[in-house]
Amino acid sequence: MATRRDFLRTALAGGAIGAAGCAGDGSESPSATVPDTADSTGPTDGSPTPPSDDGLPVRLQAVARGFTSPIDLAFADDGELYVADQPGIVYRAVADDSPVFLDLRDRVVDIGGYSERGLLGLTLHPNFSSNRRFYVRYSAPRRSGTPANYSHTFVLSEFRASDDGLRGRPDSERTILELPQPQANHNAGAIAFGPEGYLYVGTGDGGAANDTGTGHVDDWYDRNAGGNGQDITENLLGSILRIDVDDGGSDRPYGIPEDNPLVGREGLDEQYAWGFRNPWRLSFTDNELFVADVGQNRFEEVNLVEAGGNYGWNVREGAHCFGGAECPTTTPNGQRLIDPIIEYPHSGEGPSGIAVIGGYLYTGEAVPGLQERYVFGDWQAKGRLFVATRPEQGRWPVQAMEITNPQAMQFLLAFGRGPGGELYACTSGQGRVSGKSGGVYRLQPS
Image 1 (cartoon, one colour):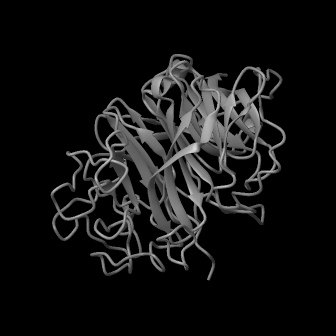
Image 2 (image 1 turned 135 degrees about the vertical axis):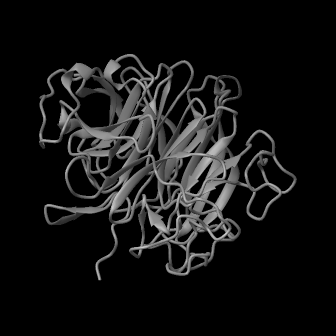
């Protein structure tokens, strides 16, 4: 039986394409760059595009190149850009160079060939300019408390930068959270501060397929054995967590916000929302939390997440039953399984793909046609992005948006948003984490 398709894995042109690899010796830093005006323009795959009077399509303006697998971005208030590269290095992208800001390769698992592990998340404290605190999420070799038959340990740590903000201090690490990870895949990795100052952390369901097998607990839904996505009492997998990194508890290095939905109820207090498979990137616009969740083999989805919400996995994949023609729409205690606001299939007419890459609601000014629309994409980019428009009610309609220099984005890894609301795309020319084809690009009018 063929292995189920997991995040960042597909077969293209008859050959398996992986998603991770070696970082090289790190002797050469990536370089920031001026825009490349010689790129070709025009559609490459016949994908439908929004009408031209929307100010679309867009082009990708190079900001920094030469990374292995740029997986996350963080912007300081002064516009300083930090780039997380999956093998374990954080860079600063400056005018003509990208010097190493923090090197964690001695703490991150060795990723060779295909891997969903590595340095997976980066965010700066809201008061970074004064306290120089920042946070990273990475995959470490098994630590104490992680069973011997598990893959690795999920680590969320706080670090401090030098007073001038030019270098991260590796010796300043303070571990905030460790989670045993049963399998090597479905690691999620997104971390972001919400508008109230709490840290939100995405966790995958533990890996493998179907949310079953080693490391997957039993849940209330008997048709699909196992189910970390539906569990709220045994572990923190398949969820969005919400913690207070500014107020450590008596028995843990973080506090629990008093209004977290399970405080005082059955369940783990860190839980904010659950029912996720592999939430790949999350973002806030004002008080709205957008979370993209990679599907298994039929549908990709984006959710507008609320406190205490249950987003269905592994009872449902997107808005559809998983593992059967019929399934419940509520839990036994009457909690609703919330459908996504955005969904697209793995094949068919219109936008399609294999692994959703969550983005942002556009609030910038450079591309007026994107105003107040949610910009996102798929790992198998094919020279295009996706745009969803908020409806009066119901699911958000999705359009494919042409990239006029598609060679800049063979594979899409992540998005970032700068202080002015402009959007940036992290891309790679390879389906494996190897080489130096990774780049960071800003979305511009074509």
